[in-house]
Image (cartoon, rainbow, N blue to C red; front, side):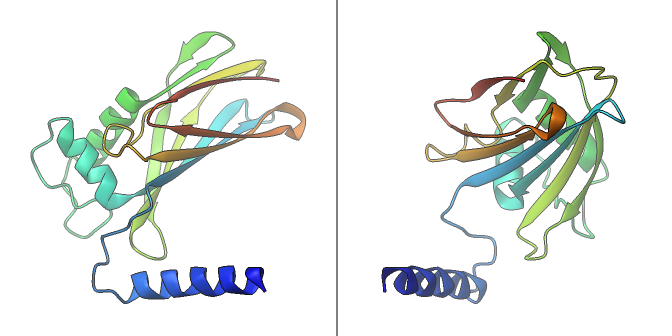
Length: 174
């Protein structure tokens, strides 16, 4: 019976937020990051899901005064440049105890039009023994910000991390 109530509550929540007229508002402050090691391509393939209103607010908090309108027809001409600068400031990786840089591959809007998928890649990762993640995406914006990080390492080893506005860093050894 409790499971039925929980499912009904979740349904009502999503139904209410879908038709509330506040398409940009949400009370849940969660971002998601997948980091997959590709032994064949010798890369770390990174996918992030971030709510666009929060992302634009955090970028603006960092000093960008123009409205970016990310993933819309009115997107600022330098939108990708501002995104890359933001990611470089807020998302840092060390592979095998060495700082690495990544390429910004692109982005796409989510089905609900509230969030975006952002794609990054670290090249020339010959082997992955350990990974240090510093993930500060949106952590200065909300005290209750949660960041779920899913990692797939060598030999398909998987791990999950939960970071927040207090714990922004984690180490994983494979």
